[in-house]
Length: 246
Length: 229
Image (cartoon, rainbow over the protein chains, first blue to last red):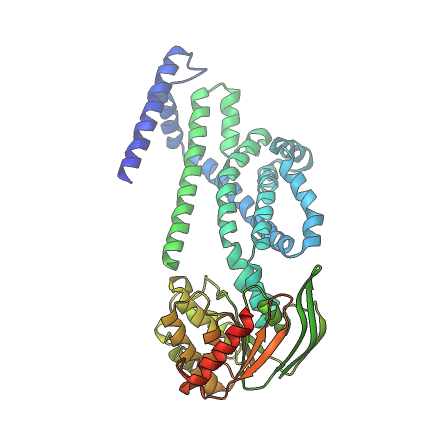
């Protein structure tokens, strides 16, 4: 454990050195040095606005996730249980999934108010993953347990609560892991293009317009750190849950 | 309790059960014995109503049925108590504890079933069937994967429960000795397409049975002959 942590630090250190050396050969507008980027990060943290920008982006991502699960989970369950419904809905879900995220952003620019665009795009990007994962989990529920439930006269609700939902928990966890990482990237991209007024993407867009490469990189690193933070938080949550159940 | 008449079951064109006649009596232990793959589980599935695709008639005089499957079919995300209580609406924990005590697993009541051994899990599955309080319990080779010592103990526990509750038990097995120790009526199935080639009734009280007993030994030889001639 300790050794692997050390290896990570060494890897990061080499990356920074490489970055530093490369920045020496380029104009700072093309590639600023790690120090300049760090400086820009520190400066932006001095400005309290960063927290509202950060907060609104995280809020949009989570709101999108919550919406997607509220709609996607029951749809996925129903698709898993009912074959006809699955076959009818599947093409639509595949269509939404295969559509480039950028198309959703551009369509949303035409259809929606700018403040709603990031939320809409997160939902569009994330919901097919949730639906298909949950449907797959439901379809793989052990047929033998359902037979047992039939013999012991379980009601439909009892079967759903005691067999389907617990069987699907693993699929829920894995779909959450996939979509959590995606949702931050997607929300930032939507913010860059839609200028909703606030948010990390909005700041990145301004940094690009003003050719503040250091700021642009600083914001990018902040997105990476946020994603990392929430992924670790989630891993910790699931680990403690599985420890408890042991 | 169950009358099976001219039962015929096919998988596609493969005839599995051929003209089965069976009369299962209330309160008795009926054991259906036959070689592996002869359609014993299929027969139980037809009796239980899991499989309704057959020819012939199956007359059932019961409303509730319990089933101890070959695999325990427990819910791995629940503990022992919840796996058992799930089959009933109105709980009687005293009775549950009593059943668990007979099956020698009362100390495991709060354990997650994933922490249990195969033998313990199968006992939980037996407890679940008895707690459900059906008129009839089907058992599909429930001891298949257990060692001989464990088997013998579970036989005794099941017979205790059976004598106390008076339930009708229908078990399938390929183990001749298991049949001799547990059955009132033994139905012998032939190889596929399976027919009932003989019925043997055993009139020795369960607790007086031992495999060195001359009468049981005679039955054992008789069944061997039927299987291998």
